[in-house]
Image 1 (spheres, helix red, strand yellow):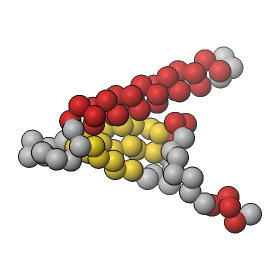
Image 2 (tube, one colour):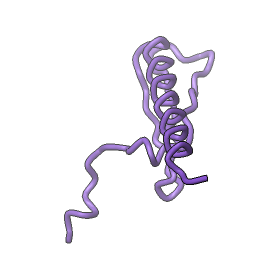
Image 3 (spheres, one colour):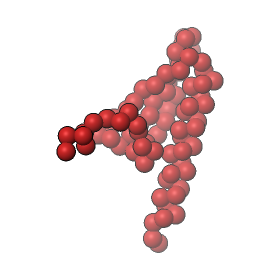
Length: 78
């Protein structure tokens, strides 16, 4: 079906590999972080208006990735 290839603008946590901040000392109005995925090796770059928001997003997403990886390991048979 044609709708199978339509982006829903959602990155499933199961596809996230890593989350990295990309903040430079000269940044004043835009603070970036990257979401590294297994989706054709795509890296999504997001930005926030404050450093605190950037760090909160990056930490929250990385915590979700870590929890997902733990749950997958628990669900795997020994």
